[in-house]
Image 1: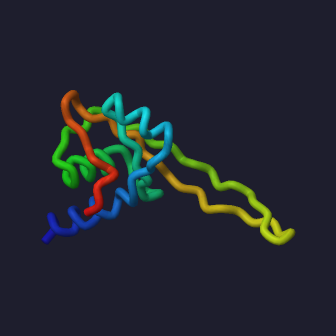
Image 2 (image 1 turned 180 degrees about the horizontal axis):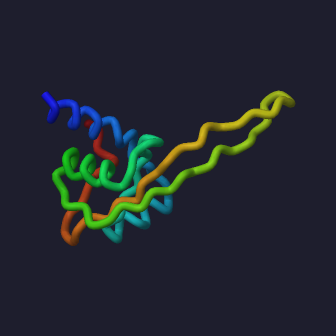
Length: 101
């Protein structure tokens, strides 16, 4: 039962792949970018990627993306901040982040 709880937590760590021009360039160097949970740490992200995609992760770097202040109809508001992870895989391994599940 304890293993099930851990697996559920791991599958909640990775929210979505982050697709942008920079992440596409990083894909050429075995790096992939994911939006992750705000409370995730490097060990959780590494375990989640290895479990979900059957790959070997070499390194994980986490970045907190700060919220932006925006105005909407003359009122100030802010977008939500989020966290992203740069994941480097070992040589010869890839992830297809554009494939639908």
